Image 1 (cartoon, rainbow, N blue to C red):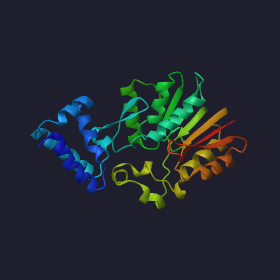
Image 2: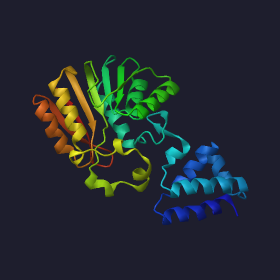
Image 3: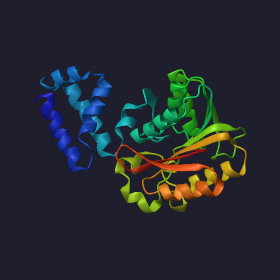
Image 4: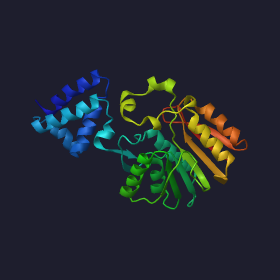
Length: 278
């Protein structure tokens, strides 16, 4: 049996269990460090016992709904390779769009930025990598998540500050930009979440009370009541696709004079809210 035939056999079992067939090849290539060309050439060869064992072990993890990125231990985000495990969410492509929005709207060479709920550090590190002159602080309620974000900063050779904080509770500074991709899934929408996400990714980083609006409300109220933004300060938020109007209303209560926009992602769904002076 060739490697291609054995892969096809295992992939059929994955699809039957509701998992993506492509995940098997993705993980196998990553663990073997195979280029696409080397992988294609290898497909025609007889499958070795070593490859059988490794592929079966990968398949079993995928069948247990473990995300592919957790199996290989890393995820690519905005040109960086970040360590990921069960302490943090796996960075999504939609969040790269949030980073791109911030970079495109803020060409200044020296800004202060706070990333609330940093998780793996994806947003903060991507911004630090693209804007080395910015002063960036990354915060998270989870000590475990912060420890992983610090690891990622060190492995990427990026210098930023880290603070353990529930939203702005432990923050004592002013920022030009506050950005957050907080937990925003409502318990009522649990059935929209994939099994591999529900099974493996940290629930405190996924779900929020108040129909998913709890963290947005806290950020809006704290930023509005206290002096956390500079005069031209901006807020950028990633949102669930049904939450645009609700998040806009929360920000309007605290910042009635600001311009607030809802922006769509590459799939045409509401995905970001941006607040500035217009």
